[in-house]
Image (cartoon, rainbow, N blue to C red):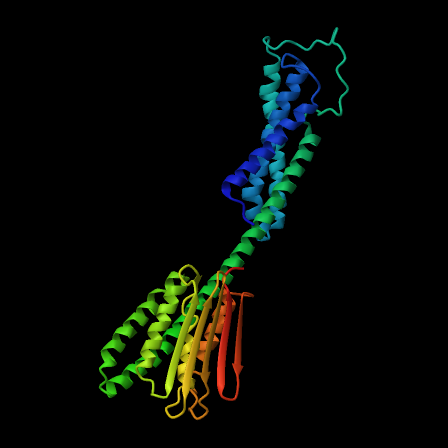
Length: 359
């Protein structure tokens, strides 16, 4: 999990504040006029500043640019050079600035006469030496390297997750592009059939088609849509199909429940209805198509039933492409939140989709 910038800064501030100030609770009692206390305070401050510099140099420069890129030997050589440089800077500051400053007249010399014994101490923090600097150096190097490794692992994991998301988006886009031409092909066939009959319904069919195309082109790009919009789109398609149905065919579309607030992915139901009209309508036999949609608070139950036309020639080029694409879209958008059942009897074919809107 990636931490926000402000929270990361807050953690750094808390960590360094603890590192800088907690040790003072274990210092021997004294005040700034005490030479030993001054000496301990100043030398520790110098050491702490150098430790912080080493920490961030390794975190942002050495570990990412050397160790994480497989340059192990240059990494350790850089750390050795950094340690030597830190020791030299520490010595130069102490002997060139701190020690002469502490010898000035306005700093009283240490006096141990008549000094009462101090309280018992848990431990003493020694004046930073080469050994003390080595311990601090090793600690911050290990800590900063560990943080750099965790950050790199988190970055790689997030990039992998982003790659999966982009792959899924590309696949969904491809599926939508496959659905739309298939749907358009069937609808244009319907209008062509009406035009050949010189039907007065041709103009109405063109208007219905324009509404369908507007929905197909623009709605999928905007993500989930209101259930009421999807139902309206479905009704336009059914009205368009009714214009060419024979007298023995009938269509029943019923919708129950509140459809004004739920949102779903677009174009989920239309392939099932397309399949019913494509394979269930017969020009001689009774061909009822029954479509029902029950909308609950967090659940949708969609059922489409049609008779089976055994004498219809199969579509060899696109056998069930719409339903197969919809299955894939359901698995991507509603994993473990949908049940799609297909029941084929001797004379009827039923598709039922049980959709859970919330996980």
